[in-house]
Length: 232
Image 1 (cartoon, rainbow, N blue to C red):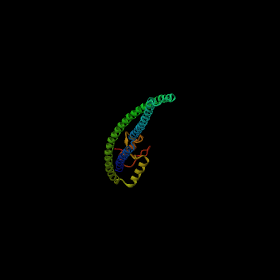
Image 2 (cartoon, rainbow, N blue to C red):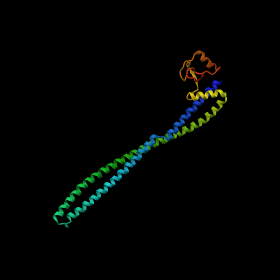
Image 3 (cartoon, one colour):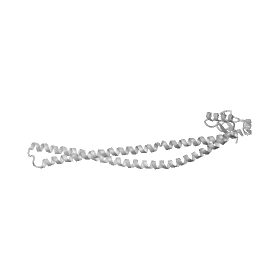
Image 4 (tube, rainbow, N blue to C red):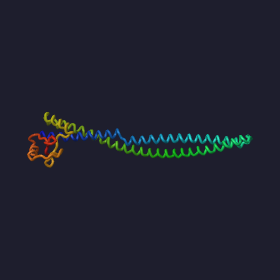
């Protein structure tokens, strides 16, 4: 009965280990969702890019407007008839030509700025849609994970109660041996015999060894990996 009790305890502990591993994975997923953070970063960057593009467009519009006012003032002076000096008129004509030429350059810059702004706005729309999609997926996933988390916590409570009952049927020295093996063997201290071999390491057992395990007359460890053997 001692080996059977140990095997039952091992089954419970394995389920507890699996539940804890899954709970940790759920916690990590809920707290460290890289895709969600990346989508939020891309959205923030798209917003910044659009703000900068809008600011550049406003500046280009202001420069064009200022240049148009200068040109208008120069042309008004040129055609008003108030200036009669040929040299002054010639200089003023040169200024008008220069102002018109620079206005064309500024209008080209404004067009580029407007195109950049449109592109940034489209990129922001794309980033917003992607972010919304990621958020919706994350929220749905979180809902399922939180439900699973609650189920696992209830399962752990039940398993802990079962574990306490299972330990009560095993003597202290055997429990100490089991716990030591669990620490040494990464949680797996008691294993089944399968097809005449240890199911953990695959070592083949002699017929006599198998018979000892099946008779449960004494505790028998695998001669290769050292785990306690059990025959169901």
